[in-house]
Length: 171
Image 1 (tube, one colour):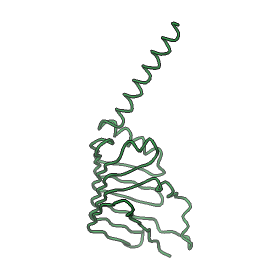
Image 2: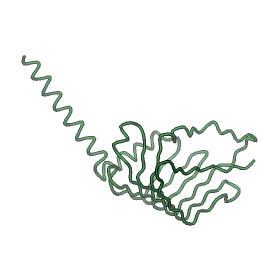
Image 3: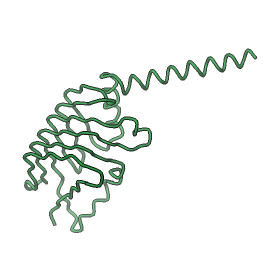
């Protein structure tokens, strides 16, 4: 009987500690910095930012975000993101609103004539849904020249409306 009480109290304490850690990681500014810093260990490239504020459970704001790997160099002056945090438990990222200001994407030119880039897997995007998106001053280029410039783009996506972005590569 004494062992059952000990096991019950230990389980309760473990639950409380794990709950506090999860709340810290997704519910506080400093927890968000820990999550973003540790996220970079799982990415094939290097992720950096100047300032982060807000919470994952509400609106997250990141200034001077940059990422680069052997296929992509991305720089965003200001990113504001609001997600349905409860969907993360199901490994789905439902973005309520996404605001991007002054983004530069530079893709490495492919040396292949078939443009089959097997090093980068885009399949994770099937679990990404965006409801509202706003972009200002977006530049997409490869190493040779600018491909796309979006001055201003605002869209509220309803039900079955979708945005399809096609990456233009040089042949």
